[in-house]
Image 1 (cartoon, one colour):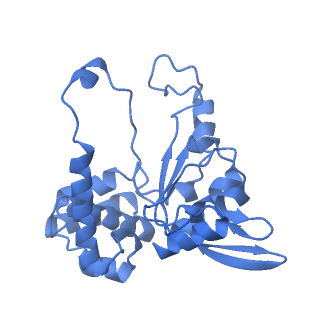
Image 2 (image 1 turned 60 degrees about the vertical axis):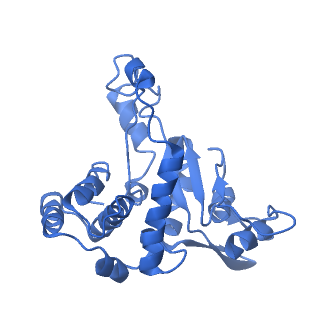
Length: 258
């Protein structure tokens, strides 16, 4: 897109010649300083979050990133842009990216449920706390992935990437028809979300129960609806069924109050 090409050009990493034709994928190392992640320098240049605009920002070993780097993601994840202010001026760069992160469950990497884990409960707690609650609130889907056993590795092949791509393109088509070309459930306004979510009565009842039981906040409510609407789109469903809503709530990773 023109936006992606312009950001890449300002940073001096754009294709030559021509425009960017693929969504960006950025995977900075965990030693990157905050200025490298959000932008800065002299002259002011966009950082990794802007270079990932309209694409994916992948943070491997997210718990190893500095606290300052991680906290700098909070506002861009909400607004889709970042403002860099320095004594010699200020610039605003687009930063609407999809954040994907991976982390070990504890310092040794095995997890406290594994009998081979050598970490104390305090070490596990400190490791988890490297990601603040405010940042965790902005992560819509949290999944624990265990090491597959021999039976799983030797079993039936999973859904192919081609099949997944077809479903994603279908879901994107539904969202473009709903909000306009290039727009998704993630960047629609709250009013647009309320008009388009189409909850069946059972799903609405489940959401109200979750709010009462877990004190679901306004942000948590809206984010659960966005994930549920997207799940329904992937399911080629015009309405959000109870299973879509319950799936979205379960993927909040135990953060129903977010």
